Image (cartoon, helix red, strand yellow):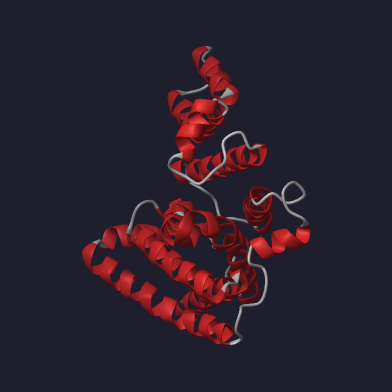
Length: 270
């Protein structure tokens, strides 16, 4: 919010052009909105109202910290959506993803409500109940690819221009990850980080459908498109796997394997 006001004063003083001013404001507005929402959430009446919709405990400092971190992460994603982004680097990708892991561990109350051992169990970072679920997670890679290619084929027919835009955005963002080692790194990072947060921390509290919606919302660099539907459907499948297997590790295998397979197919197609 302070940054937004600073840009307003600079613009008023003639230090910035109108185009630069609005570009800066569009980048800062998500953070200003996150700050306002965080302040509103301090109000007990707001916390009680939210608790009627979501399974949270009003007055909990852990919940408040989790909400603030979540709002900041959403603001970060929105700010990258409204501006033209250069290709991501390894450092930027780590800086973007590591906070999600921190959010997951903080959100379930590590060192506050739970010991590290209890936290690992709560996040589902344990082997599945039955060994056959490892096989299911590997088979799931192929199933997910079939579903994704089906949705993309439909998108190419129904909304070809939108699908091209999605492809162009993806190509620009991940243009530095165009070799086998980089693709494996990207796939494993996404699988571990996103599954720890969504299927590990969020799903046991919010359920499969809500978690899949949040998962799709994370990938807003694609805007609202068939790609959003694709991510949502994959989120439903990963949620089902988490519930049935009792392990987030199986979801990590499927998620990472899917991303790596798609990455290698894209590399071969070039």
